[in-house]
Image (cartoon, rainbow, N blue to C red):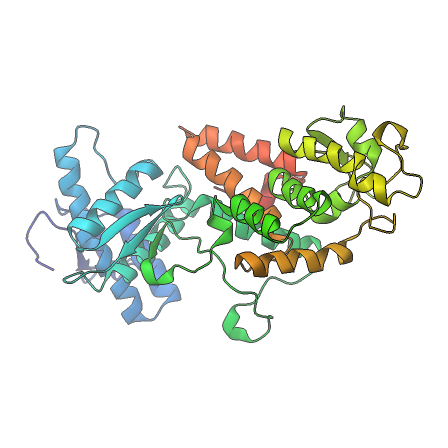
Length: 389
């Protein structure tokens, strides 16, 4: 790195000066840059000396680029800007300086290498992500980490919270050999290298409902199982909460687009309201008065059923349960070519809901309000279930 003025660089702590910092990062004017200096110190605590040095050095050209950008912009755009601005700056830097190409894909950016691209792009993105993690923890950055895809991060937090609620240890990494393979998992990175993409990617795929609908038509599913799947991805409810619905749960909400159900920890009390589309509500009415009517021992229509009667029944007229539904679900996944467990429909709902919040919100307060609304609707005890954004 050139030692001329105008670029960020590292300088050794002068002899005779007592400081925990062996190196100080200075900006283009020669003034110390405290955030980068602290970042360098923290990396030295957790990484090897060589890796820590690489993480710091790969960020210096980017911060120099920001200095140039600030001199051209009246608003002083820099690393402390809002996430949308930071992401645009990173995208410009990766394309213009590292000679990569970038494309928008369902709420995140896919970075691809081309001839002449810098091989440091992977390290640069990793280092910048760690820098913002440190800045967020220290309170130096007023927003959530801009290098994190909010929706995917929320999904991971939900999974971790549900494992804790079930008394299970945190998921071990794949290389540990302690976990059963579970297929692909979406990355939490906002910028993702092209080879990191996985196919299929149901959690991030807004077209998942259309793919499932096509598969259900191909499999010639009846109304009952179609409704269960639709309620899952439209409401975010657990499959067991849907399968255990009583006629009275739907009737209590006017037989329209809502139903009451229990929640985890409510001990069977109907404390939760789930919402679904008008088309699904129409299908429920049709199901109750056709398929369910045929399978009901007394052949009763909606107005004749008791509140305590199960909404969904088997062909023998018994309550339709989780174990009976599972084979149908996995047969559907095989038909449409996706790898998604039953609980994944709930995660898909959370992912899409948070992505919509993060893309439509104009301020951090709006993001927080959207997050709190989702917490209340999903029936979580607190916002801690989905981490800090």
